[in-house]
Image 1 (tube, rainbow over the protein chains, first blue to last red):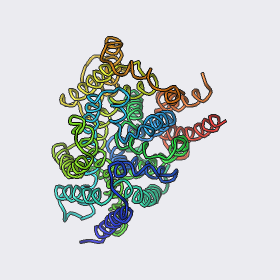
Image 2 (cartoon, helix red, strand yellow):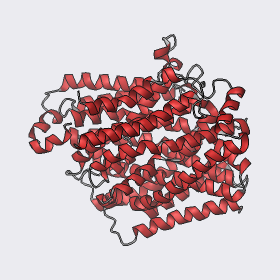
Image 3 (cartoon, rainbow over the protein chains, first blue to last red):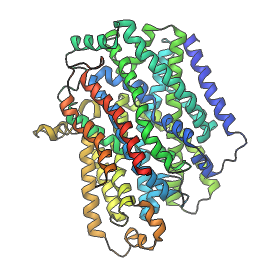
Image 4 (spheres, one colour):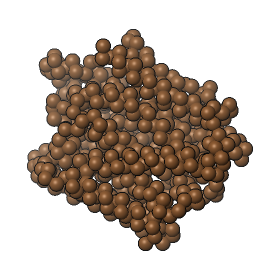
Length: 506
Length: 59
């Protein structure tokens, strides 16, 4: 084993060890395992949320997207920023709705708000479908790190299997508590590594950051802005909006919101979290350095590690790889826990409500390796880049946004039939587009699907169109079904005590 | 319309709308291509704006 790989193994063992230590002595009942007992303070929630949000996508995918598509990658900087503005209003409303009702997951919130177990099951199925590509992204990232830092001794196929096993072990050891501890180390390590290499590489190779950008522009005019037929400002705006709306629709980001001690945590976070985004600018610098320094890579996602291997000794490549591994393990564990919880509690128990807590808990743990396998299968089926996987997940998960917001902001306006029909229509459109071969990277825009449209329509992200269809269907079907005898949502909110009702009004 | 809501809308205008005018490499600002500078600027402005919104809401 070379030095780089040894460093990575040491950091992975540390993360697993910390996870085990954090868990020792704590009772693992269902609520505790999934939301950590609602005892987190501001700093912990801050780190926990940052831990999830900075995944291997930010790390490898961000540099890879810059390497492949230049300025289009700036969308990554924009969507998180706008998502935090939304979170200022959205998360306190979700928290106030969920906490008194002891709801531990996203599907619980939908089931409760629309009084429809069927909707809860539908939401869960959509959420898990969206999480599989997101999980596959983390596994692909782990695989890239392991095979790259092995300097050719471990094949990428074997590396992905190693990644999946490491992730399953980490999740089995951790639960949410462990993730919060490891997230602390991960954030410190990632922050230092990314800022250092983001500044060092441009200066080392080109003298300054500005000089690097000038040379990129000389070599590829327009590459540092948005260009091309598809990745235009119209694509940028619609993609930023889509992904900002979907940001907190993931069961795991939603779940971290439920773990907070009080609702003010979210408002304070909305002030500080945008600054965390600045970290991504340094990832972009690495990507642009790679454009000039290691051109002609087969796979754009190898950009960050390839340029690092070119510039640094093996032990430091190991440190960079360790930051990357933690960036995959921490969010990956969140995704696995959230998927397993969602399938066990909201799909299986949703269909079969007589299931006991013990049986549900057992099923959750059994599902962890099963879902990890589904992620592995997705990686091997794909050949897609990290950004493609992420945008596919977002295209699906954002379809949950209209139904959630309407349930919180205007209870009773949308019927459960309307919510279900809207989500089904949006997801069906995304699926149809994906099967038609319109992958987000090569053809993420409307004109790849329907030709002859004016630019401002043709260059829209396909999934934003699906979201509009979703909204339209939700409104129309709600209008048709409102006031029908079996509509839970309309009648229900009149029975809610006034004090409790006030919580969703702003 | 509340002032805090108007303020909260500004980052959306700056990022989603602004990119149509800011989508170019030149001029370089602080070493950054203009499009990257523009989006980065809005990240910082968003934090400042949300700090003001938070203050106003607490009163």
